[in-house]
Image (cartoon, rainbow over all chains, first blue to last red; front, side, top):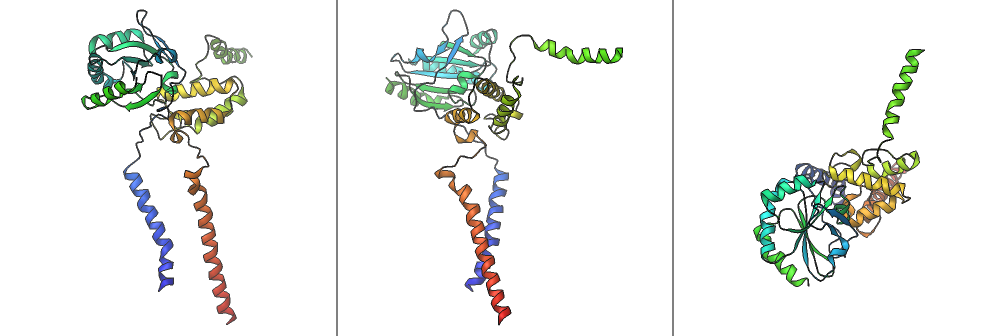
Length: 176
Length: 137
C-alpha cells in the first residue's frame, strides 16, 4: 500500500507544478520595484536647475537639518497632474517639497506648473535619468521622504493621495 | 567602375555623419568592440524596471535607455560588468538582474535539481536491484 502511494508521488508533484505554472500564467507578476535606498543616506546626484530663478537639486542641498519631500515627476506624466494639488496642500501644511523632473524640458515644465500647481522649492532636471537611477526609482510619480540629516526615510510609489497626507506629515515631523 | 566608386562613397557617408556631437550611448555602440560586447551581455541580463518582462537591451522605455547609456559609460570608463550589475542590484534589488545570485535565499534553485537527480537515481537503482533479484530467483 505504501509503495503504491509512493508510485503516485512523482505524478502528484508534477501535477502540483502544473497548477503553480497555470496560476502564474493567469496572474503575471506585476512587481512593484521598491528602492533599496530607503534607510540609506542620499546617493550622490546633481540635477541642474530647470529655471534660472529657482535652484536645482543635488545631494549637498539636503543635509541642512530640514526634512523634505523629494518628488520624482514629469510634465508628461498624467498621474502627476492629479498629484500636484496634494503636494501643494502638503506645502501649505508646512512641508518642504522639492522636485526632480525626469526626461523633461523647461518650457513643458513651466506650462505644467502654471496649469496644475507649483509646490516646488527646488526643481532639478534629470535629462538622462541619472538621479532617478541613483535613487532606485522605477517610475513617476514617486515621492521620497528625506530627513534633516539627508537620509531617505520612505519611498511612496505612485500618486500621493489625501490618505497619505497625515502619514507623510508625521514622518516629516519625526525626521528632524 | 564608376558605379562601384559611387557605392563606396555612399557607404562611407554615414561614417562622416557620425563625427558630429558626442554619441548618445543609449542607442550607439561603444567604439571598442570588446567593451561593447561586455556591455551588451550585461544589458541582456538586466531587467527593464518599467516593462519588467524584457531585458533593457530590447526595451523602448526611457529608463531602459538611461540604463543602457549608464552601462556603456561605466564599461567604457573601466568598470567590470559585475560591478555595474552590483550597483543596479543595490538600487533596485535582485529583481533587476536576470542572473540569479548564489546565496541562502536562492540555494533551492541549485539544490532542488541535485536532490531530484539523487532521488531519481535512488529510485532507478532500487528498481534495477529488484529486477535483478527476480531474474536470479
